[in-house]
Length: 609
Image 1 (tube, rainbow, N blue to C red):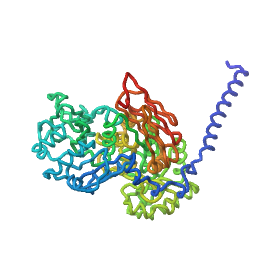
Image 2 (image 1 turned 45 degrees about the horizontal axis):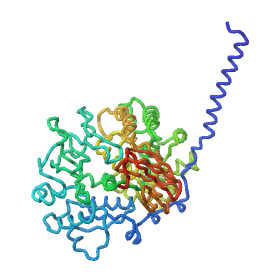
Image 3 (image 1 turned 60 degrees about the horizontal axis):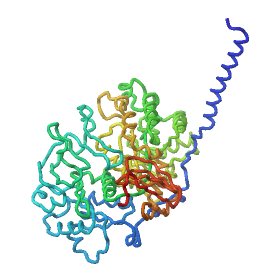
Image 4 (image 1 turned 180 degrees about the vertical axis):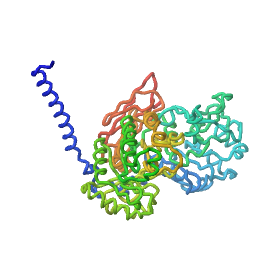
């Protein structure tokens, strides 16, 4: 039997616990300022397209490295090289052919690297090989962005010598997978092949058929094809390799990897291979973007009942949200939800205000950003959709201003027609679908940036992983997306559900991005600030003995650099902080405009030879 005194004590303790829980809930509710967007700023105060750094004549004549491009002016390789030069603050000159470059008069520029669009070069022209050999002798590293046709290489011994090819083993070899070796791209070694046939079928989209070349001694392979078990791995066909000449390197890419954003990282990795140490700026932003999430109206009721035995709203709340938040908490990416108030504006099912408030609170508690999606599945015009969205939002959260917008497949003309007006008046950045090009970040208008959503979190393929490693290497940028509209309005006729699609999502997200945890998780508006500073940044590098002096210009807030080293050395930084990413690769965060990087010998190795 409990005494009256003990009963009274227990009651008091229970009341205290109840009050504490209630007080925390009340405090959380009071402090949840979901009705205002912390990323809202006056557009005039943000850096715009006119602030993007451009190489000037004095830079060309002094310390700035220059890149030469030879090939068709409008090819994907040309555009990729231009974007790489822009992002790495290099000057660039272009010529339609090696012969045109050789014939040009008054050339004074010494090029660090020359990129060749092999598909658009006339290999029968005698001036082509003469020009390339002269460039190599002068100290210009050569990059073959794709190789000439195998028939051209077979007949051209000079070209074989330049590429480090001893023979053509097979004109067309069929690999089963691809092996990316450690020490080239950030993120380490990766094997793009799975013995599980089901897994391999879902993820394998690498280029697997290509000529099989046997390389000379003195070459170094960075990526190769994986053949059947009967072939010794030392004899696997090379995909990306380097040939060493007396004073230069010749890099070769046996495939189309340099025609999209992957080329940005390949050029950055190749440039780093040519020096004892390389330092270059990066964006430093890792985004997880939930597209068209959450929807606030009951949609596609019959199909939702068939697949889930519940309404779309319960699918979004009870099935999708737990998976999303678990994945988010187990990785280092920042979270942004691009809200779709409705998908179908003509079905008569209206969004509910209480759902808007519920999700705004929920997302704010996770320090996530809420943006707006421009997507709908009905024939509603974009302007009409946005006016309806504005009416609904102003009724529930009148002070909230959206600063990010998901444009999907909308054209730049359509985007430009609505930016700066109505509900999009404060939008500072636009998230676009990745279209296979190399312009990952930039400006969509004079004051609004754009950033590409690169990787499908639910259908992450091998080619996406390779491209992600390349973009991380070049820009320290990643954007993983999951599209809720694919769940609410599935295109297949089967019964695949969110549970089926997302069963590997959480684990894969943590595994595939674990080697990039040194980079910061950001919302897309935080990423926007870093993009503006990155594009506006100018800097000067000086080397004296075992020190690098980094002077920042027009940097604004904090900026970040990647330091890559080919050798063992102890590294310390004054005027910033340092994080090791891979062996010989560091992320440097600047704290003022003058940064000193000191490298001391380790195991008798002198970093500058």
